[in-house]
Length: 124
Image (cartoon, rainbow, N blue to C red; front, side, top):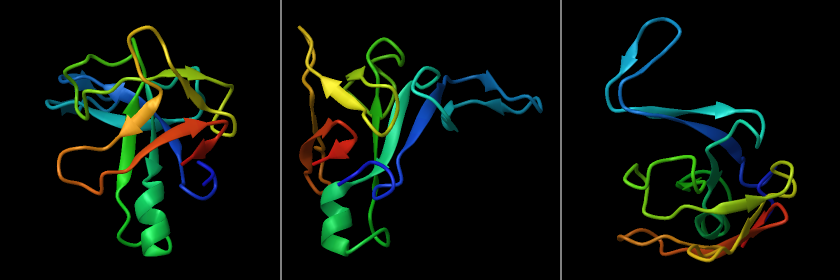
């Protein structure tokens, strides 16, 4: 399935604990916000392809967040995975293997158990 438009993917910026918004609001537990480009992104958010297929669309489908290597502390949630990216945007985003990192995404911990890959803008 395509990250866009099928899985409604967006790039994310990681907001660390104590981050202060432009309006002065302090995010004690951190957070995340959507950004437009891979260059400014710390990760990617998309609907789970396994649940999207099982549910026949968005209703009841949970999201997947994948943080990028070197952008988000290893102890930040969700974890523990971090991915190395290649591409110019969501249309051609690919997770590539590195010496210490896998390119696959495996959801563990009691959820749907999706295990797949992000390759050239597809999540399968």
